[in-house]
Length: 391
Image 1 (cartoon, rainbow, N blue to C red):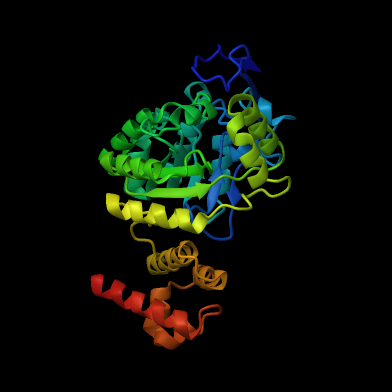
Image 2: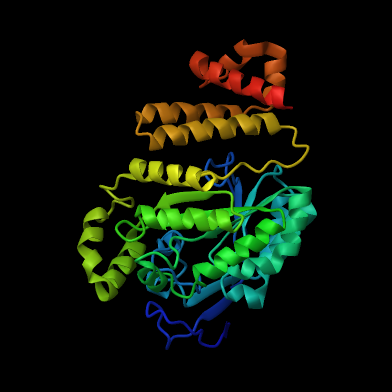
């Protein structure tokens, strides 16, 4: 167990008299495995070298009881658990699973000392696995050499978590809530370095804070700053609050920004997790329109490794996931979005590549897939034809 010196910050959300405490331990497993890739970041696996985070963002979902390793969510930024054997565990785990995108890396201040994120990237490079990194810090560019190598062999994606810019009227509030996180200007500068290296990058505008960061001028500033720094997407998502995380966040609002307390207590009653009266489809539409205006996407393009034998399947799944999301933000009946999602899952689970199925059986083979049917089958066939024409 060791301690680092007190970190300097202008934010009062971090107790400057308290020092971070690091506990090194050796867990038995590190790789979280999904049945298939998610439709958000396109990751199938995740592996992280630390629990707890020195950045100390007040709204972080990792303060939830199922993620937080300490008794109180308020200690989240001070009690950091270091998984000393993370690279070795990751190597053993990846040797047993199909190659797919790994969500990894944690560039909090502890990484400067322990360098576990870098060693885990080295494992992914050695074993040919693509990676997705989401960071609220510019420190990720330290490992740009590895990310470039991974991108050439498999694929790498680096996203930066940014929810406001200095132009925002509530940026001072956000900076307070973000604790020790570097300012957004440094994150955008890092994004530009990543983009110049030829790696897919962009912004994850997460979490959107109701009444604080959910206004159109803020979204527009983020989208245009992303485009100006080489980013190709802004992926947005709302705030969730659960158990200790909710208590911690509301307590901080009450102490520092009491004008928001009643609204958040109403939006997030005990046990709700997600806001009970927040018009996400309207916000999603605004973000989509603003991204089009900025010449970027509001979705992350699916990274596909060169030579992937299931590339056609993955492109079709990406298309179906995009149409599910479009239906959701358009305010269409929930059943329509779910039809697209279920079809995407069914196709992702196919053993042969969908291109082979279509070549052998034509449109009937597509329509016969469980969860697809005639209507979606026609959409998929039209998309497949466009892929073949562009090949």
